[in-house]
Length: 86
Image (tube, rainbow, N blue to C red):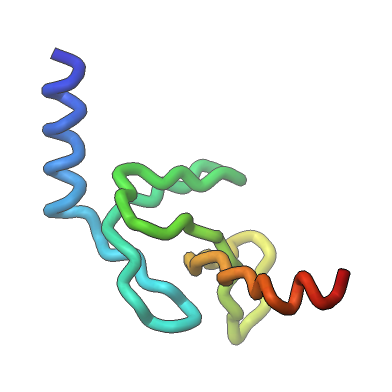
């Protein structure tokens, strides 16, 4: 029964959840529900291939009580340059 409910939840989130767009590139990363509770943000139903990295979005007017967040992906490591620097 739990498995069936889990599959139903994934099916619903893949259909009606809003798209998560990378704020740097504009690429669609996947679909998920983002719930904000005070100082926490919970991402439900994300099935994208790349892990999400939350970032604060710039604002025209500085407000500390309500900040906007967006999502991006972690940058790929540059392995040849890492070896040269060691």
